[in-house]
Image 1 (cartoon, rainbow, N blue to C red):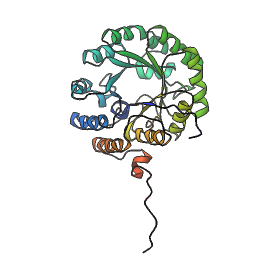
Image 2 (cartoon, rainbow, N blue to C red):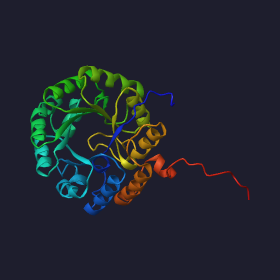
Image 3 (spheres, helix red, strand yellow):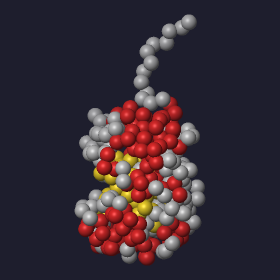
Image 4 (tube, rainbow, N blue to C red):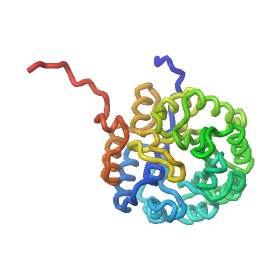
Length: 310
């Protein structure tokens, strides 16, 4: 018994290929494919593999079409792509990726910085993007960015999040996700907003995307799981951040999330040692040390045997 009311399984979506790399200097395609091959070998079932956005705005992901063209090499994984508008959604579908994540910022200031239009204009496009994804045999997840806090406006009014959620569901979103874009939320606020969203969209699958900017990411993940969330985003090595949110740093690290979930008896289908191998491949690809504490510590916290004095 863990003493915690935890679910039997949690579905971890690996976002290192997209969120993890979007602030990095462009990684050559060969480096990305080596990273992707290592991630697939972990057993993860869902990978957000790239984003179809302006290459001028996010040069690190300018090769989205080239990455998509290589996905036929990998079996057993649902690949998805993030999009910021209908044009990006069409590009993704044309490239063969029909499972889409559409980001809508709950704050107008971040929406203008991220998508060039206020929240109302962004959420109004959900219906067209959902129809495009469904027509291609895929699905649409609406990710609400700045769900808790905005780098420009401060705390986000929960009513704005609920408005985005309600409109998204009405227009055909298959699932929902709340994003702690700048890594400011704490467990109490995590649980409060997740509960409000669940009431507004009962029965709709709900996930969470946390950043570890202030060291609360894994605590928030635990709070979310304890409140009934069974779908979490994480990035290998703790890479990541938002180029349109000043001060936002890395996502929660996949290896750290899998570490405590596994120890608590929660199945993820992901092999921790394989994630650490993927972190090493990622470190080689980006060319600098990774922020993950677990990766820096050398992996599992295994006993080393009794101390033997010299």
